[in-house]
Length: 385
Image (cartoon, rainbow, N blue to C red; front, side, top):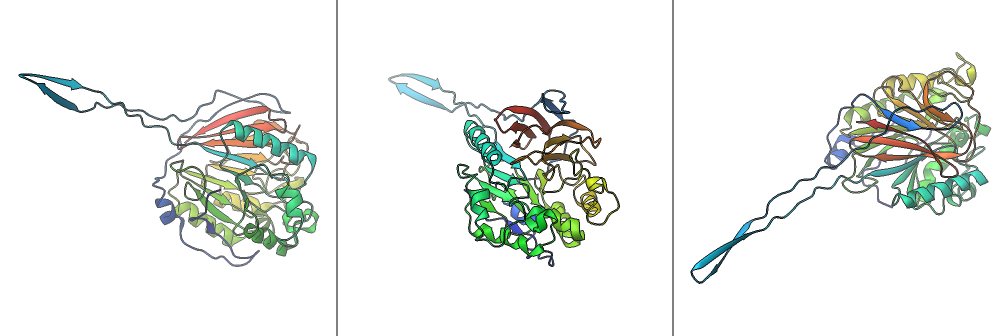
């Protein structure tokens, strides 16, 4: 797995003050990128899944090729001269594709988690390898880990993903903060941050952070992107104005072509937890309703990142674009819960089996494909840049 020369830490310690380190712009400048403006339409295809529908075809970016002529040379013999001309063709190949797995709510150590992991391995092997995973919170059910030596890291992370040979960039969920999911044992977050120094696979330098490709991960010469990992449980409880200021500053400073957010709690969802601001169908109740998550997303995510990936609801959904950003829920790494029809328009949704999202990212396109725990392709959609 690659090193992390540009990995940037966000905040030191749970719910403590902001520690801003080096800005993102000089780090990503070394990747040789310039920001690209998004284009309009998106396309997708899909079939199956409860309540699911798909539309349109799919597309991916393509490389260019050029040809050139070789030089000429002379050859003399006696009083007669001849000249041979040779032609050399030069081909410029397309940039490498960045291959990513996104899934959340996996920290069970159960049969479904192992089955999903096996499907991920089979797919990544068929694709020639995956570069990393975005792991979307609720990493250790049911009440998080007590310290970095907690045996649950072995039984609920290392063992199920033993055969996966890429790094996981990890976000915190409400269960990781203890209290059987109530998320009020704030000190437990630090155990997961500290576990980064123990594991070769688990990566969480702080409660929230960003990393960049290709500087930190992915193939050399691959698409230039910045990924922002959020601590949405802290946002649930306090609004976390320090985290918001950090996010706004780093997004504004980033020259990356793609800006992608990932965290545990969704902005919109048709699952049982539902939409931020109305979580559990209870608007107006502090903390429980998720109003602080909605406010944070309105100010820090909407129209400012291209894609936001989350879990929390244990189903797979690709919501229709809201507020200038694409929202995807993929919280089925170890379990499923029912979709309950919150009324938010989707391109696709299913609650039938465990599964994951596979992403191929190029400078020109984000293509996401949902797979179930058996490795069956369910839906694909391409978002052009």
